[in-house]
Image (cartoon, rainbow, N blue to C red):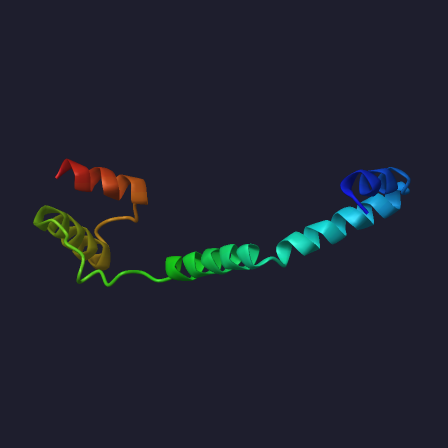
Length: 95
């Protein structure tokens, strides 16, 4: 059976049979080796994104450390209210 015969056979199918055929073809495509490699690559990327680098190993500018340490000290003593991440970043950039 060639492609033309397959296409002609598909046109004679009912709507429900076409939907079933479409689902079958999608399942076939998902079972290919290339598709499995892509899925594994995406899974590894998601898994890697769940881990956070050790912050002690990351370089942090001294000015940023001073702002964060002062802010944390004030927060722990109850002198300041919580601020948003955006506000903290604005303050860090201003230092």
